[in-house]
Length: 187
Picture 1 (cartoon, one colour):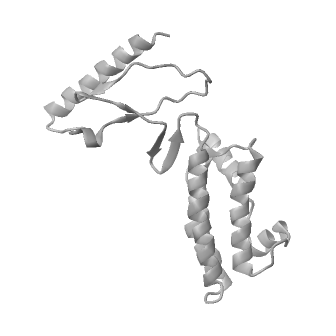
Picture 2: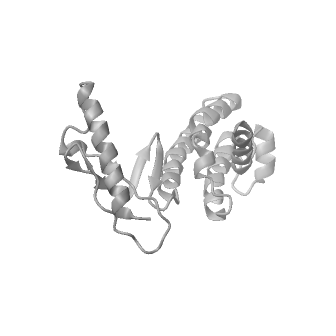
Picture 3: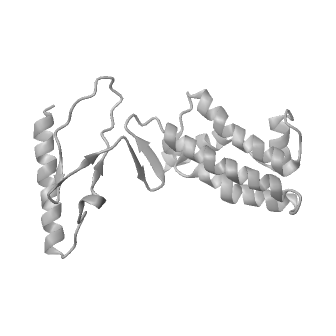
């Protein structure tokens, strides 16, 4: 595997894209403030120095973290930053649920939870799911448990299974597993 040859081929392809854009009166990355980014995905311990890529006469900036379609991708594909972002967003939603508990009926709270909190975990879950990483699974599941406590007004320590049965919820890990199976079936 020759890194220089790969960089040469990629730079050639980026040049063709630039030519195509010129031909069709389009422009990509017109200035340095909108510089193109690249993430080199690798789980290797020894970092390999890749040759620079050039696009539109500007060097492509190498970054460790990039957001694509709402999914934070880091160079090791660990998804830690993405999961931390999800937990922060959903925790705010659970806090709002806790305050709304006194003003809305339970079915409305469940609908709000499913629409605005759980849906954040469902987005791209088959990509970021790590079924072998129990600390991440527990952190994610804790959000749904806290939401269940907020909706029902139950005290901490109440059985998770009883709360889920009462609210008609399933564990998020089961949802991810089912969604993976559906995606695999479609493939």
